[in-house]
Image (cartoon, rainbow, N blue to C red; front, side, top):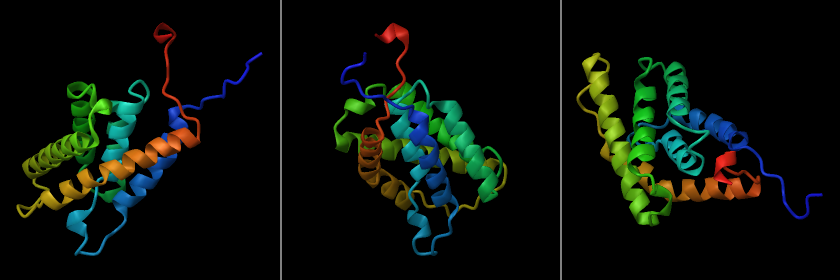
Length: 173
């Protein structure tokens, strides 16, 4: 008999529908006035889930998500994938205690990591001859960093409401 224990669902049950929504936001056109301030919701989603459940969501998932965005947006294959994988790698390897940082510290780290990912993507795009010099990362990075707190709170609320739990191995018990 299992008393009051409630059944927990897989993280992937929530991740894939949210991934679909974030990819749709990545490929929707915005007016020219708002386009420089487009937040990178996909990287925010991947950063949240790599911190929440690093055993299921990791660099491979970031790479595949970036390839999907590359295919749908028509950008050079692997450019977004490389940028997202770099951001997830930096969070997963360099900021292992990211989840216990204060919210303002998380905003700064997300902003810096996103900026590095954007600069790296621009650099690779420039090497292969696909980008122009008038790239503006500041507005994009600021909106992405400022949206970290609402996105993290939304993802945490959805994880609680859908009873999503990170995977635990038998050795963790």
